[in-house]
Length: 120
Image (cartoon, rainbow, N blue to C red; front, side, top):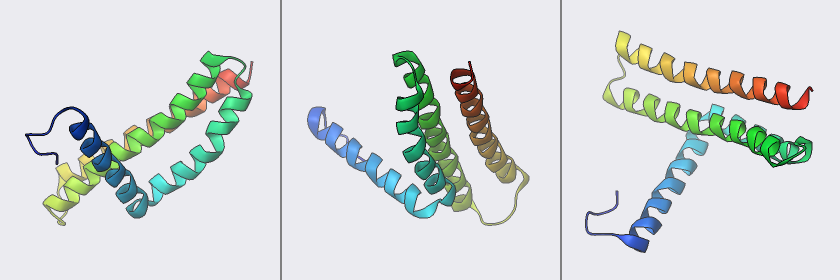
């Protein structure tokens, strides 16, 4: 974490470094995140090509990025739960299931938006 005395540009640089560290750790340790990154590498350029205007392009790209954001949050939840205990607990399982459900809803959302924009 950034120390309490940092501010301005130094704080921004440190925060960016921590963010990149988190992205790299998630990519290295989470297969689902890697798969979604690879999918986004295909879908984002496709969105820019298929969208007929700025709004359509923004919608198509944003729902793909939303999947990555939700997967990062889900991975964070899973890491915290696993750090607390490796033993099964109903609440731990529920937390992981809820995170997974959020990812599923983001995927469904993306599919619906893409269908509505592409199929006119």
